[in-house]
Image (cartoon, each protein chain N blue to C red):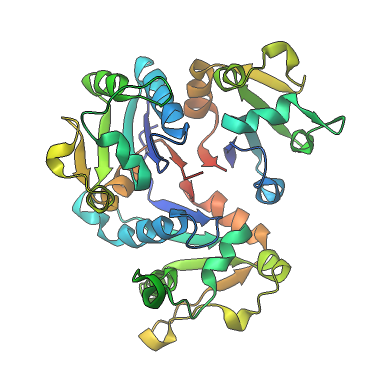
Length: 136
Length: 99
Length: 119
């Protein structure tokens, strides 16, 4: 025990807006970049959307227009623009009938990172590779 | 991966639970997850308990809070107290996930 | 002995998740472990001082103060508090306010992390 851990995986399992959880997952993941004010080690975040949580990844969200709150899409775009590895479960988007062209991308922000559609098995491997898991 | 999975509800989390595997998997029935160890819905035990190669635990305090006792718990599930829970998560399992 | 970080996002009243987290923290501390508690979202309601005790609602004020006296570190999300009208002077003495990067930093340095989302 006492070994320094620095890879944290944020797993989003709930759909957006009804619950505060998905938004908190995204803001927590985004804050990984400023932890250096507390510790010397870098925290490398990975975000995975599984189950109904994949619904957070649909683009053209208009929560700012409707309710005056930042959309989960905006947070996901910021994640991609800061090179956060972002995975979405292939089986779940297929189950829900979501085509890949409906998924958020941040190319308009100059992001090279895109949401990666992967089988659940890949997400399990990622869980294994991370030091800590946070299910939202 | 030595994973402790906290199963905290009666419904709604099965589809994710069913897909999670680990080299060593402990399933901790807590909160409303305890019903999976004591109910026989339509006469059948919960399919949650059919997960292969998992070790099942149930938190005694959450069981008793909901009006059940040790002798009603499915034989595949070990009844534990907070004391045991702390030992298991600090010593046996390395990663924790709450469903 | 190890370090356990617990993050909770559920409300003090209306969920039993905080009761679970506090019992877990209490047991771990009594066994000699170090425990950090992060309160975010509606769980920040636990950080507010002057909560009245009713038998129908979870009431963790006394046990929380007792555990902090035994070394439990409690941090409440600053933005979550402020968005709920809870100011710094409203907090139980000894609870710190910070942003989520501190939770992640504490988690990175912990042996175990249990993150309990909303219900």
